[in-house]
Length: 135
Image 1 (cartoon, rainbow, N blue to C red):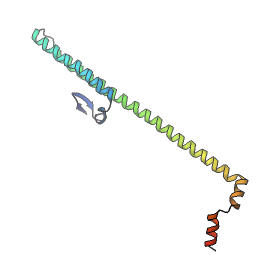
Image 2 (spheres, rainbow, N blue to C red; image 1 turned 30 degrees about the vertical axis):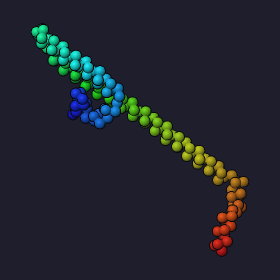
Image 3 (cartoon, rainbow, N blue to C red; image 1 turned 120 degrees about the vertical axis):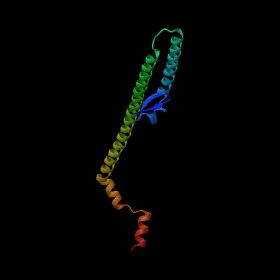
Image 4 (cartoon, helix red, strand yellow; image 1 turned 60 degrees about the vertical axis):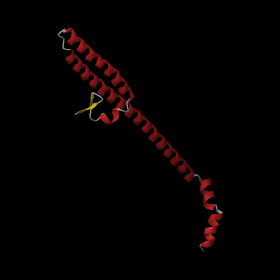
């Protein structure tokens, strides 16, 4: 099903996003100016009585315009999706890599005899305060 967006038939699923795609708006305006030229040619054809049906050509041009803008919209949306997917994957990879590095660090610290010995024998002021309050 298509919806009308500023005189152009746009696929229903593209309609909410199309107004935010700058290239589509630019080309819609350019193609709209060309479409108005068909109106002028049709009027001149009627005045000159040349018996050429410009109306059918204009309809074909409008169909082509709709097809082009729909395709451009889909391509722009896919491009943004791909960029966002790539950036999200990089962010996830960074988090995972950092988690593995931290896990490796903790694993190293937990198995180091000198560090374990220090922690087992270390008595802080707060540690002594807890022992004193809980005999």
